[in-house]
Image (tube, rainbow, N blue to C red):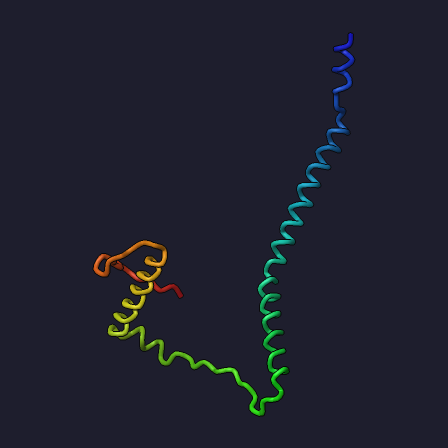
Length: 128
């Protein structure tokens, strides 16, 4: 008789099961929405970091009012005739040499020693 009473108490009715299901699914969807909102906010972090650097740069010139000559930022010049450099075969050999040297330096920095004659680059593809 005691076993029969224990079995009857463990029975879940259909409305209780529905409430449990909706509560579980609602919790999952709320957490997913929260995660997607956090991921959306991550794109603003670089702007916040750059903003703090800009504030520091703007504070420095105001402290140096004693200087009679204002400090100007250097203007970088664009690379001259980049289209011509691609079309000339002599410039391509220089480009391959620079890329090879960069790869060798990177491999040596990782701890992989590469002899000068042991590195062979088969192709370099430009992605534009």
